[in-house]
Image 1 (cartoon, rainbow, N blue to C red):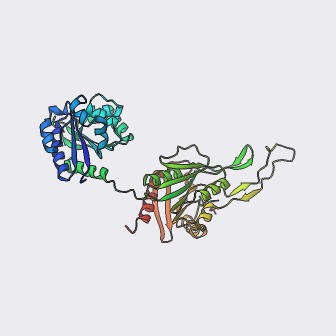
Image 2: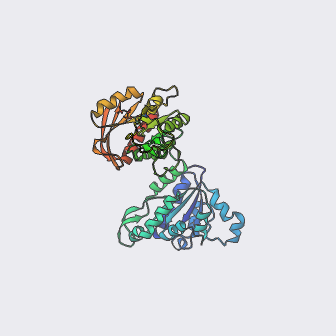
Image 3: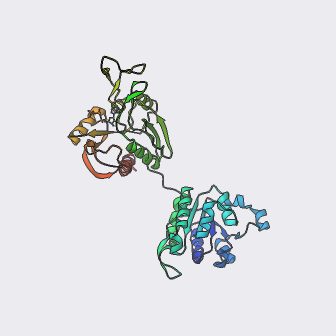
Length: 397
Ligand code: CTP
């Protein structure tokens, strides 16, 4: 944190005195500290002691015209590498969560695009009150990092969460925000297929399957959360696109194959879609009930997207397929490794009715053998698989 500038907002709480220790540690680590004291903060620590430790003038009011002429509050809020609010009181967090600008501290928080760390300290009841819980959730949703307070005895004699975290823990959070650890799949590109495909019988009817798309969407979301650049080729499902994921909607297996070829990536392919093995030689007009009984459906084989990817010339470094089986789970999945040119197969026993459910039970099958991942939610499977993919790409680090 050497050479970095921290704008430190000290709120009005009994823990304010500990901000002095934080200033001393920041200065020791070579950071510049620009201190701001709220009106109530000044009831707990004096501007003089804060200024002396920070070796910088303290701003306390929006209406300090002399200070505004030096560095206006807008510039002040943007000149820092990080804004730290310590202690972050219930009141200050409430005002920041609703976007008020009724004093210098709140205005700085509203006027900035700099990362913000809030270090809460308050009475346990105040911390656990629904209003505070709501405000903390809003702040986190808005991208603010809110530390969890320590649990212990409070100044007021009560016991529970609400104590200011220890200064070394605060320093650690500050260091992390100034120099974040890179995400494990940063710079990697992934393609994921998900959902069913619909194969037209005529303009109004189709052949489909029960895939909900939940597993594929969860995998796309977890890969994106791990820093990968994700393209999700989705069959017809009404699921929300995960944050940071580029979605391409398709209907039929052939459209899915075309989209996968078009958006193919060098690093990771996870084929989760329940692609229809056959399409129908579709009628141009709507089939009508006639005297000759039901019309015959002529089935034509669809391209195997996973096999085309796994055996293709532009094969990604890691190709992962899914296998839905109702018997001989491991033998069938192992056979699919070679048949599809996949590195791993996530084998799923679908005899127990996992379609549409939140839960599943998979085995990870690789050339080295298989692992039983036990019953788990599709979200857990997604995060576990992403963990394995991350490990694969960071083996040499
Ligand atoms: N898959 C694909 N394209 C197809 C069929 C399947 O990409 N036309 C992919 C699926 O996304 C999945 C894997 O292949 O990752 C396994 O599909 P599975 O359900 O086992 O079907 P099949 O390969 O057709 O095997 P079988 O019907 O013999 O069990």
